Length: 293
View 1 (cartoon, rainbow, N blue to C red):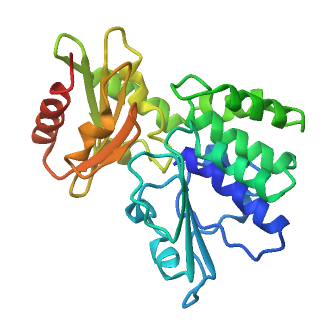
View 2: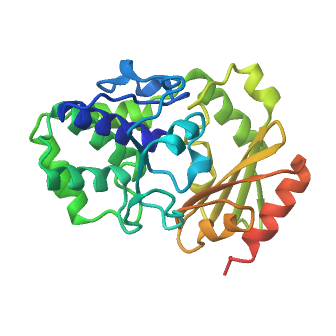
């Protein structure tokens, strides 16, 4: 979610600058990103019984990811998708997909530069936030010299990179902190320590008053442990578990998730498994084991 947030607001500002009447629809989002310019204009739902001229999807592989606003998008007269996932299904009328790009926001600013949108500080702040969150603070594979050239362009506009990093990557909510303690207590290791797995339940979420965004970063905790190749984080939902995976060096977790109807990136992916906890853990671990060296 946090990756799409910066890109969505950047697109909003660009379209407004072009004189368009824009609704930015994000039903649920992490409140830690409310520092971004324009966040006060976000709507939880669109216009009723209204057909939009254009629907734009950012950083989504398919329409299933358009939770809460799929109908607005599907009913739009024209549809655009801008994305950097290799598993994108090319679901729009016009698809701008570059799986080599480390961030959707990086594709977006190149497109804006191409069509002559003037990049101001507000757009730049949103773009750089999208790049920072999608690359883990420029730590993930795929970051290129172009990434830093764009960053330099945005810094020259006065965009505050330290503030973005602090608020987008370092600041934790109280609920997120409590969940960190829970998942560390429940962390299990298998396959000679190459797989780390942990989970939270609906009861945990109720206990700590969890809201959207409070789960962010939890799956990375397991990946950052010595010798762990695959980190697995399960979050209980009404009919099963949302599963997030991260890998360190060589496992393609998008392929791990594909059998469950999920996908994502080589080093970061997710899926949904409709089984009770122990069965869900068993199935995802057995699948991940087949990719280990």
